[in-house]
Length: 378
Ligand SMILES: C[S@@+](CC[C@H](N)C(=O)[O-])C[C@H]1O[C@@H](n2cnc3c(N)ncnc32)[C@H](O)[C@@H]1O
Image 1 (cartoon, helix red, strand yellow):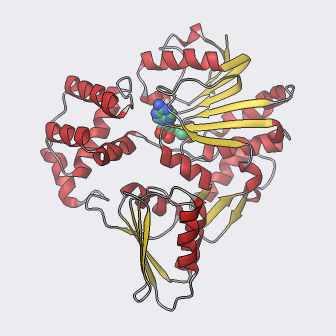
Image 2: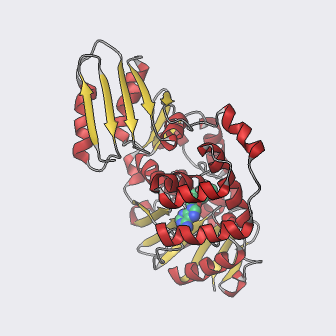
Image 3: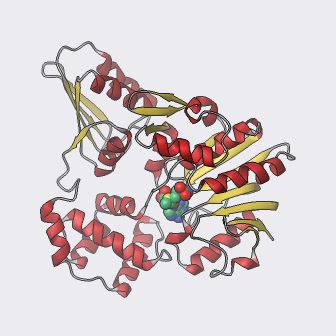
């Protein structure tokens, strides 16, 4: 769906078709939103999965004045807006798990591992995303959820739809990408990075860090805060990547709900943060926005660590809570490629329930702090 805005001045209905692709399109919409209006506006997003920061901020202002109702077609956008605190209504039939769809979960047949595996191979051939070495049980759970959302109880019909229709595939792709994250998740890990690893990295003139599988950016901004407090953010370049292009857009927006602020602050303190957490954000009534000073040394881009090759010469790699979705053989391949991506003495940080034991990782890494899953290149 190509980008297009239609606007009816009489009854103030705005319809935005397609994804935002350049700043001209954003300005066009902002100009319409800024026109003085007496009536409430209805704005409908057909096609967009994420909305740029400047548009989000206008929507927040209009909703505070009770001047705007937002409708969305894509269920991904629906969850994003709900998460950050913009009220919206979903017009896609399967946007939320409706009662009738839930009933389908009783009717659905159980999936066959072999059939699912050959489906994953077909997905890779057609769409270029390789899920064949993800944990098959987790993939099967995600397929079940996707089938319920689409209202399809037969796997073969679902398979045909996904293979022949890119929109179906994109919905499944988004269901495969589980983006759970938080600021200073596992605070002890950040405390150790701050007290032991950053003082060591400070001996370099230039520091390069890769955050692989960065989700919506909360982990990267937590790291940037630690680097800032250590006084080394300015000489650091952080590459922040994720397979899911929409979480990358969310990360670039840097807009988050204040609903979890108490937890964020407590995590920050437990991570030995030295200042006031909220100093790093512009705080509005219902949302907070990351300040520019944290953003400027971060390069966010879409990248699959499996299919898009490795990036090089890093001093520190964080790849947390991603390996849990990979089988042991894929974990080993990734450990080998992270080993190649690190310079001598480089560090790797994995997630709490991940490690280097069951995947031959000891060939490539030695333990630095096994409890916190921090390793050094061999
Ligand atoms: C559970 S989140 C973890 C986020 C963050 N690292 C943390 O620990 O809070 C896992 C992320 O890995 C991403 N991911 C999954 N497979 C990937 C791949 N092949 N390449 C890059 N990112 C991937 C998902 O899209 C998701 O955003």
